[in-house]
Amino acid sequence: MNLTYEKCGDYLIPNIIPEPEPEGELRKFGLMRKHYLKEYKSGIYQGMVLSGKLKEHLLMVQKQAELQFDALVEQMAEREGVTEQLTGVNQMLWVQRMNNIRARAEEVVREEIIYCNG
Image (cartoon, rainbow, N blue to C red):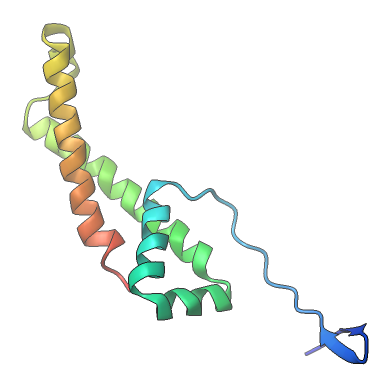
């Protein structure tokens, strides 16, 4: 282990350089997970911050949540007959049903992924 130090007055302070964070932008589900960990699992949150693994974890959960959300929306829309053809017949009904489906899918994702693992 090779440590370098910087002299600050009479003290030598180690130059600690953190590992680079993974590339990627946190979106809705990643930010929801971060908030949940920070508020309700502070020990796990602090451990991840100190080890430099927080963003990696958040991006993984975000990807998993987005995949499940998209799959659920597609399955629910197909099961309930909410198709693009409905937009031609009654656009407001299509919007209403899709908003309902997206809300239910988000609730499932929150309970099974965001507020669960870890």
